[in-house]
Amino acid sequence: MIDKIAWIHLKDGRVLGTRSAGKGTYYLPGGKREPGESDVETLVREIREELTVEIDAASAKHIGTFEAQAHGHSSGVIVRMTCYTASFAGELVAASEIEELAWLTTADADRISPVDRIIFAHLHEAGLLA
Image 1 (cartoon, rainbow, N blue to C red):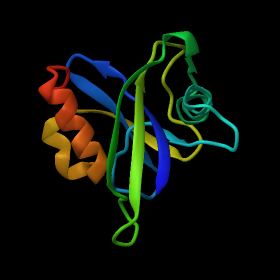
Image 2 (image 1 turned 60 degrees about the horizontal axis):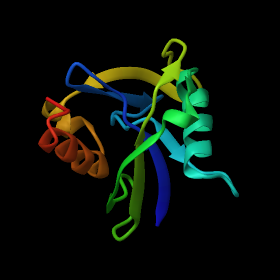
Image 3 (image 1 turned 30 degrees about the vertical axis):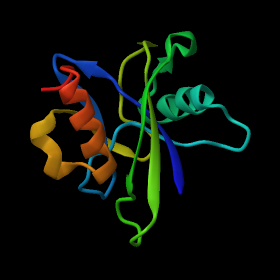
């Protein structure tokens, strides 16, 4: 089981996605926790590293936990993505391993990971994602 935390940042019916250098697939921003970190501590650290903005930890709201086959891993390896919305301060800039930011909709299903497809469907059903 791969345990990840993701930030759901929605704007105008689209969600922010990131693409790492040398990769063709977009992922929701976030990543794996360090030993001893809480979900929100992981969220704050990962988003600062990847997007150079400061998440307001007090505003973090859990919106769901989703599981699917881990993209790029052998069959049977599952990723669990615990997703949060949160406000932030600063300007979104690709940093660290992130090469590109993109605003994605359900029409981008062929460009995202399997777990993100499940999350996108959930957001779409809730009327949050085009």
